[in-house]
Length: 216
Image (cartoon, rainbow, N blue to C red; front, side, top):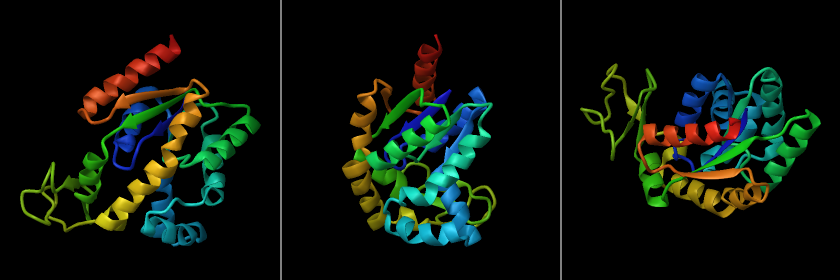
């Protein structure tokens, strides 16, 4: 099973991907997580990607395509979930060419739809603990004490890419460029859209129904 999860930043792609890898034993390929790790390591890749991420811009495909190909190669005996890639039509075309070279193809593209105003609150309101990385939201799930983690008492902070101006720009980039992938994959009859504004369990149930239909 080879899947792509589409949806604006903060739509819940990462959360749903974690549930899918546990249920279906898939490899999770999250470009956002991989790039953040590279930035923390101060690798050449991380240094190249950092300016784009801090500005809310798309990281050029040639910076990350090789990294993704390596992860897909590791998944030779398993399926995979691509979370955060492709981000535009050119990246989708490059991904398709790469998969074709590996003798593979994408089985299903799932678009998680969430209203822009809802997404803004999810992202700009997010706070993460510096110590244990527990996540909160000042609008939907605030900590008991402002700026302090309920779990370990650590300091809560806002990631650079969650700051209001960056979030606005990230959403502009998504709806102006990445959303074009919906039509791109719809033409190949591989796209299915679901309502991502519902609870996590309801979204998971919708995805499970799509995958059951796919394998039947």
